[in-house]
Structure formats: C-alpha cells, structure tokens
Image (cartoon, rainbow, N blue to C red):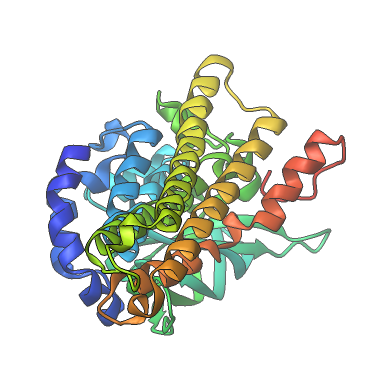
Length: 381
C-alpha cells in the first residue's frame, strides 16, 4: 500500500495548488485512489477490504500530507470511516458494501441533528457542518440527539444515504480549502433502526459490528484511535514544509555571503524542526501499534491509555505547529508568495490543528485529570 501511495505522490503534489483553488480534490486524484485500492485499506476483509494495520494507514496519510494536505485529509477521512461503518450491525454493513464494495462515507459527528423515534427507526432533521469530502461519498455519518420525554436526549450516530441530503457549499476558508468540508442538510429523513448507533458504544468500543470482524481495530474505542488519522496530517505537513525549507536554504544566498544553509542559525532550526516532526510521528505510531496489541491481548484499553492517546494526538499536532511556524518565520518574505509552498503548509497546518479532536486544552487536561485522580470531564474518553 505504501508503495502504491509513493507512485501517486508526484501527481498529488503537482495538483496541490489546483486542489486548493478548486476547493476540492480533483476527480483524477479520487479515481487514482480508487484504482490503487488505497481507499479500502481499513475496510473489513469480509467486504473486500485489506483490513490493514492502523499504523500502516497513517503512514500513507502522512506521506500524502507532505505533498498536499487537503488530499491527505480527504483520503484519511474517507478511508478511516470504513472503521465507523464496520461498527454497525451486519444488516447495515451488507447494505453499505454488499452491492458496492467501493462505497465511501463522509461525516459530521457534531450532534446538531434532532431525531424522534418512530416505528422501525427514527426521523431526523438538521444541518451538519464540516462534512469533508462529501462530494465523493455515498453515505454520511451524522450526529443527532433523540428526543426523550422522560429524561435527557440520547446521543446517536445516524447513517444516511447522501441522496437523502442536500450539500451547502459554504467551505470558503484559508486552510485545507481543498477538503470541500461543506455542510449537509436533511429534512424529516427516515433512518431505519439498523442505521442508528448509540454514541456511547463507539466511545467504549462495544458496538455490534465490532464483533463481526477478527481485527481489533473495529473494537477500538473511537476517540482513542481514529483521531490519529487527523493528527498525522499536520505531521506530514511539517515534513513537507521542512523539505521545502531545506531545498530553499541550500539554494538561497544569504545577505552576508554564502548560502543560507551554511549559517549556524539555519542549521539549528532545521535540526530542531526535524526532531519535533520525528517525535510527533513516533508518538502517533506508538499509539496505533500499542492500542491494537492491547485490545488483541485484553479486549479493551484502560482509562489512562485512552487519555494518553488523546494527549498524544494533540501533542503531536502541537509539536508539528511549532516546526511549521519556525520554518515559516525563517523563510522570510519569500515564503509569502502564492506560488511558494511554505505559505500553504503554514495555513493548512493551522487549519488542521483547529479540529476539536486535536485541541491541546481539552486533550491535555483530560490526561492530567486522570493522572491526578480527578474525574475526567472529557465526553470522548
């Protein structure tokens, strides 16, 4: 899979600016990803997928992010949703992949939908923002609250067909512009019970679909595992920014003579940035490997392990941003030009870091609470 990704990399890199300007990943890239089989990396083998290890998958996302962060984000989101789809019951999975093994899903887990229970399922209405890559999906995973007259509403994740929804093109942003993270709108859509899943089951890794497949990935507590797919994007961006800066510094003449790369301060910046990128990548790879090994051995993750994973997702992003910001500053006025990759790396890295699942304030606090014996307030633990 990694070799196939490397084959696609030159084309993805050459279309990076086009992707940003069009505010969408080109159809050519999507077709190449389908043809390569890379979209099926995390799809269950039972439905024609590769059922790959999570660490191998984030390596592919990391590689793509060095060339085009929007493409990496779209690929990571669409592919990782195979894990979410595989947590639904057997009947729903047959509906998704039984006839079309290439089916993909967008998502907006923000619980802005309002649902009521009816015979055979639910009726839901709402508007959901940030549905990355929805133009290329056949399904949508959407958060919603089910009315409960006897108590607080129940938080559920509903699976809807894209043809039941409207796409609102409101994604006009300064970073990750090519992800096409538009809003979805649905009005009084019937969702059968087989396509509704309690959010708590996803958090705990106790979904009905997880029991259908041998791979532990489908039984991993959702927010202990899948945010690594988002966190690796800024890491790849930082690697791409570092590669761009090294090339620039080796060719650029310094004001006091010689090349920029021959100056001590430039050498120190490159060394520190590389260390940050390496540390961030190692944190995320360790978590992916240890998570699945633990679930294979004991069936679940401890609360501290979950909190540590959340901490590391956010800290890897924090390290990556430090590297990108330092490189942007070191590039001077030249890094501001629209045709210079550094300014795009800078904008994309900060856009990725804005995702709620990667917030250091939330994730760092959760780990501190657990270590200090304080009841954690993080709803995603």
